[in-house]
Length: 435
Image (cartoon, rainbow, N blue to C red; front, side, top):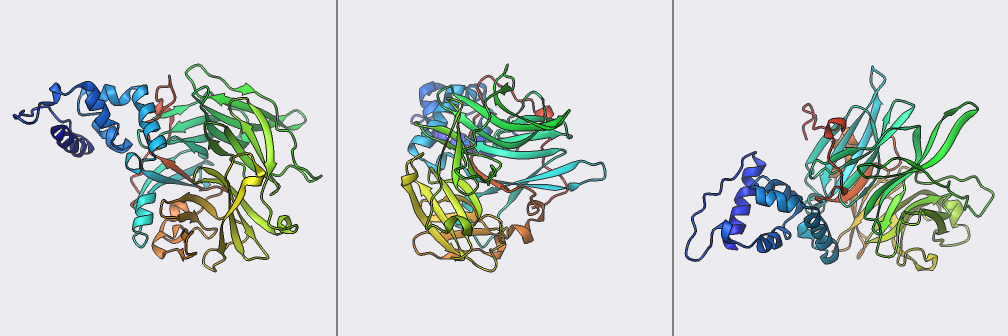
């Protein structure tokens, strides 16, 4: 086993340089050659390695490539990370995106940046390295799940595609084209059918004005867009249906797999990915006047719980709540009260809470586009100038959308039966940008 670990360390270094390791290892009395190790033992060791390392190790030999590329291996690796919560098996990343102004040809160009959560939290006073990618069309991030980022790729004003991208493996897939542009949307995983689904309310021009239809696409080799029932108006007042987040937040557990939207700062409306039905429950309140003092309501997942963060004008702070039992409005629990700070506030824009570390630090992006580390134990706030997105990363700091950042775990995942059609995925590392 010692020999295999040494070989894998060498292989990863060589693979990262584009080299293929040839198996010219001399066995000793204590260490058998690689070919003498049982396949089950090799698989067990590989399952204990991070996804990014495994991507490199696929180039070592045909056996390893076949093992690592097998769907069962991918599922077992994802399950091991999820069940054991082993942080060594995955790198936690933040995907930030920015829709740049229209160019001379009338096309909006997008910039995507991938940042390491570990580098931000362990070395907050050092600017984190950013891997940049760019697109030649408007790619709107809809959501993330199991290491996959999902986009709506809008081709002009009339048509759109769904698109999946795994930044770790390079896998990309584009759905069939559909007429219209997405407004309310969401992406998630249905564990009962083992499938990834893209939800969208599409609008297009009709004979009498704008027409809306609700569609769903299940990523698969022979899938097509399906028409489903529209969202009922669950708002408990006479107010119009006004979503606070256009991109739904995926919540997944053994009990429920749903896409969630905050509506009118009062309720959460959800779509059940298995039953393809809708439901709702109330957002938390601190007092009778709370609703009128809220701004910038932001849904997210923190500590495997559906959570909400909103700005409270009277209290001059942000409230962060967790729903301890999904769907039970009585289980909303106040997680933090974060006081306003002049460098962080931009009234009406949300505090984008992203992640809670094992040590109890909340990672968020402030309305002023600064990365914030808030200690849940002692209430201290750290927002170093080195991770000021607006000043240090201008390619990421002009986002047109409400939700500019998504957090994801690197993985080997690609939906079953799908082959990458990367020639249609216009994302690449631009040569002109240096991080």
